[in-house]
Image (tube, rainbow, N blue to C red; front, side):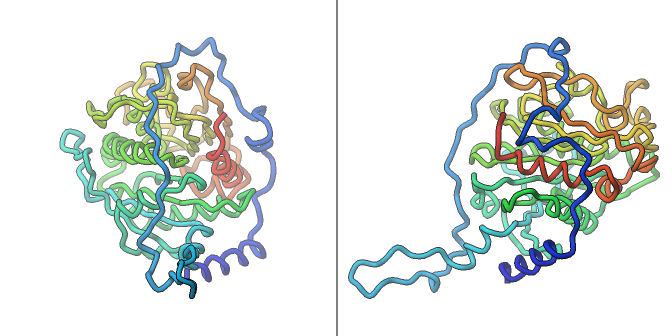
Length: 382
């Protein structure tokens, strides 16, 4: 069933979907010239790298049925062939849902020893199949990238899935190579709960706990040598930068993940209209350690975004501006002291005053092409 679905989708993709128009610099694999390297004079010396342990990738064994293993008629059994179901699973993109909506958002009460994430497998239609964190971790594969997509505010559980699959399809249609990936939708408690300003302030606080949860998961990825990338929209971008900061030993909401710091993870990051303070990625700032774990950053911003224009209303600093509103400013260096490689796109002319994720993908801002390039670059470290 999985292989048939993949074949149908592949035929549809090849015949009916059109790639987004060109208009951005050559992809990361050909030349770094498309990046904006922040002047090194703006940086402070990077923190020392703490190497993480590596482990061989493990494959999901529970899909191997005993009936699929055959033996020769000779006395010495032949090497069992790979079951067709497993072969198809490894050749196709795989979809995961990690749901944290039931977990506490109070950083003091979080269980970061073994968080009780609700894990599901998804098909291409968004239908959920029961799974577990054990299955998720055992399926990791160092030969294929695993991308975690984190949605923005005011998304219920079903909308989070549909939005995550929408972004996946925009990335898949622009994918330059036939590289199977694992696509992970991170579903966090962002349902609309009150009037706008109160709701936004509440969700801004929740990003701290979510950043810690994502940091816990990223650590598991790194312990298994799993190539990983992060894509976040709006508050999802704030969760992304917070998670990389926490992974490097930083605190969120006065809490750390309680494990030895990891830097030099070299994770590629895509941020669309991120609702994070434009100075938080400076050395010593709230998310100042995040760049210690970044390899490359692709940033889409919009200085006409009506929601991000009033970002200061949810900040303690009345002069605060959102990174998704101002575009790139100052960034701390990477773990080795080199400038963070950044490719930034001002999408104000196409997105207008909307705070809409879909407009970045559906209009000529080419977010799908850039994110597809990011997925490709996950397998390469500068």
